[in-house]
Length: 249
Image (cartoon, rainbow, N blue to C red; front, side):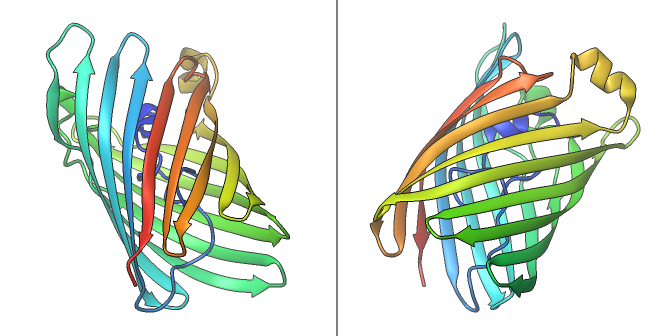
């Protein structure tokens, strides 16, 4: 099962959060045929009694067709584990595809397969130590100035050592366009471990709530900021992000 701290560290990373910044919840929309979108983000994560991490996330999304796009994420991480020296390097690289399945009135549905590679050094605090395969169903509903997003999915982690572990996950988010280019957002994230003992040992399932805003400086360029707070087994974990999304063409 993917460590919940990696949701907090990388709000646009695999495991699975590829939504429009600063949300981790995935939306059901694609960028369009032959369109290229770049996302840049600076992240900070504080995991009590474990480590503090600073990162730079880069995501490139390209539209293969109007209903299909692919994305690649490359995170760069500066980690400061408790009692150890700072380490710096590339984290776990991730790739995903999105297939928009249907549109019915205000509702859009998509399926999103994802793969995360164990490129980050776990011993140095740069990665999770496992390669993950995941799939989720995303639904988005546009209602005037409000857009709702929902996800359900399953992630299977394959550690370099030990047995593979699975995790169901769910997410829900709301975006509201307030004043022209300004929009605010809030979301809820949850991991639902398959193994009951994982829930008990962690004091509840890992969950998080978050919020943020985005501001469209130009038609193809938006700035954003957000913060997330862990609940349940992730109680005390906090992350923050600032970044930008650029529609290149």
